Length: 461
Image (cartoon, rainbow, N blue to C red; front, side, top):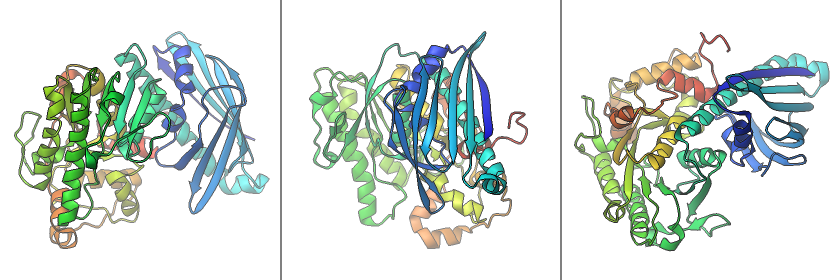
């Protein structure tokens, strides 16, 4: 059997806190690397002997069922799981949380073997070992950052937070982090609600206000995809989904007898329109479809604001995540050399790493100093050409085919013009004034994190 291991110091974090974090039902999902296609089917509800996890992993066209069982668990110190089904012939993974003078040493040790014995190891052993090291490096980074951030925010108790758009790219990541932190998430769903969920119908303005009472906050993320075709019907769906959804949430909160103290209602940097000069939260709205949509979207939260709730509008930049969104579309194109400069490439591209965005949302929930518009963008400003060149460099695909502006407009029309050829250099002034602790402030660092690729100069790569 081969052995793959990694150790990481978690400064200022006690072993008991590391154990509690790993014991939460949301932590397994939180620790699934974004570049891998893995679907959780069953998640253990406790770190106890006999608890079982079932995952479905996509390896190319194949779908492999992975089933592991916890065979040993020593509370606050370690646990071990063994795979009884999956892509490995043998798999035993020990997770340990060793006391250290400065905090806790996180220790992962995997003993494994591939199918096919010596032949299988010769063919794929080195690749498998590199992938396991890549996974452990990423998991340790996420564990260190999440535990440090929860310790800094210290809500002091378990929160109950309702989330719309909980199954989307951002919403699912937010729910995983909240649950891993020991907090309760109440997803708002448009279908029949299951246990722990809340049904709503934004098109009909239906949401039971009494179900929102006693919550610690609401995060409203739901809205139709902005990248759909901008036909008259598509435009109407984009605007209506945002305005109707926000109005429904805001009116329900306004009629609560004991409303949550805060509504975090998403917006987007498109509200600034196309600009060349840097803009912060005090800048006036721009012109065009995206700007008009953003203004109507934010205005729809007015009933909650008038009822005395603290309302925060994160104006979200282009989210960088290997799981989907804009980067998910670009990755296969960039690997083929088809994601180069668009038009002049000088148009601003305000961006944010998914992990940092999740913590912006949590900070908006917990920090009463945040109110009104908050630019949820990374501090490093880049243009589209820089983004394309950085992605190519990270992927080691330096030659990328550019696309003239004329071709973009001919293919995508006004949608292509607004989404791909225009932008604004947005500044996160209010987050910077707050001292927000950016984990991924540079584009290259964010891309490498999402893809599990260490910096060439990282001594622990």
